[in-house]
Amino acid sequence: MGVITLITLFPFYWMLRTAFSTNTALAQAPASPLPVDFSFGGFLRVFGLQSTEDALAEGGSGGSLDFWRYLANSVLVATLVTFCQVLFSAMAAYAFARLRWRGRDALFGFVLGGLMIPTVFTLLPNFVLIKEAGLVDTLPGVTLPMVFMTMPFAVFFLRQFFLNISREVEEAALIDGAGRVRVFFRLILPMSAAPVATLSILTYITAWNEYFWPLMVSYSGSSRVLTVALSVFRAQTPQTGTDWAGLMAATFVAALPMVVLFALLARRIVNSIGFSGIK
Image (cartoon, rainbow, N blue to C red; front, side, top):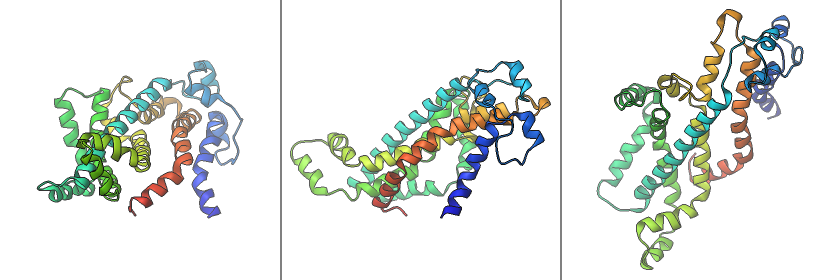
C-alpha cells in the first residue's frame, strides 16, 4: 500500500519540483530529484506578479496567463453544472423511484442506456445545437451540455438511495396534506443529504476537470476555463520553448482545490456510494 501511495503522489511531487525551479536550470539538470535553482518565479508569473523581463531572465516564455479570470470562469461553470445536474437528477430519480406511472420502467431503461454512449459521440450534435442557438464562445454554451453529459449516472445513483427510504414516512406526510412537491423538497431531499452531497462533489470535480468540450466551444478569455487556458498558455510562445515552471505552477494551483476537497471528503464519498448499493 505504501508503494502504491508513493507512486500515486509522485506526479504531484514532480509538479512541485518543476514549479519551484527555473526553466534555464531545468534544461541543465532535467533528472534532478530536487528543485533546480529554487525559485518562486513560476507561481509569481501565474498570479501576474512578475515582469516580462524577470520571466525571460528565468527562462520563461514571457507569455501571460489571466489566471483569476479563468479561475472565475471555472468556478462559475462548475457551480452551475453541479447545481442544475443535482437538482434535475434528484427530481428525475424521485419520479423513477417513488411514483407509479405508465412507461416508467421503460423510460428508466432508456435513461440507463445513456450510460453506454461514449461522451465523444455526443460532442458533434451538441456543438451543432449550441451553434444554432448562438451560444458558441459563451459561458452558457460551455455550461448547458455539461449539465446533461453525465446525468444518467446521477439519476441512477440517487434512485438507488430513494428506493431505500421508508414509504411509511412519505405516506404519513401525504396523509397530513403535504403535496408531492413539498414531500420532495421538505422530506426526501433532507433525508438524502449524504448521497446528494456525494453526487455534488463528484459532479463538481468532473465539471472542473472537463477539457475537451470547453476547448470546442470557447475561443476567447470571456468563456475560457482554466483547463483550456493552461493548454493555450503552454502553446503561447513556441519560439522560446515551453514555460514548464509556470505551467506546472498554474497546474498545481488549479488542481489544489479539487485535491483538498477530495482529501477532506473521500471517506464520506465512499460510505455514501456503499450505502446506495453501487459497486
